[in-house]
Amino acid sequence: MSFGADQQFFSRLASANDSFAGSLPTTLARLAQLGAELDPAAPAPAANELQAMLHTVAGSAVTFGYRSLGQHARALEQRLRVLMTFDAVARSDWAIWLGELGQFVEAGQRDPRSLG
Image 1 (cartoon, rainbow, N blue to C red):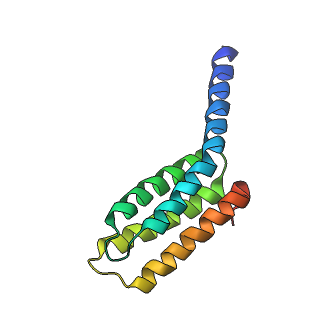
Image 2 (cartoon, rainbow, N blue to C red):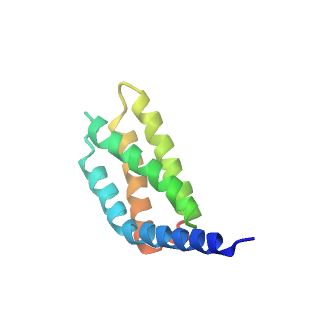
């Protein structure tokens, strides 16, 4: 049995975890920026990037031990997907979703490991 391969694996995993944690503030800031740029009358450009970023955050967060952050990102992504399927969505519905995105970003910036 070779323990070298295990050590290499865990070393790479720790490095990837550090990389995720180090990039999280920038990622959260970009999510906030895209939320501010989202125009309910023409949401597609910002919404498409938001959806892709939330999808990536959701998968990566769970992988690297940020389970609550990942689950919340997944829920936001799914609600965004639903909003995007309709030809017309009320401004109030967009406002609610954007408010939830803002809360997600703020909570993630405070303490991403215990996002509730």
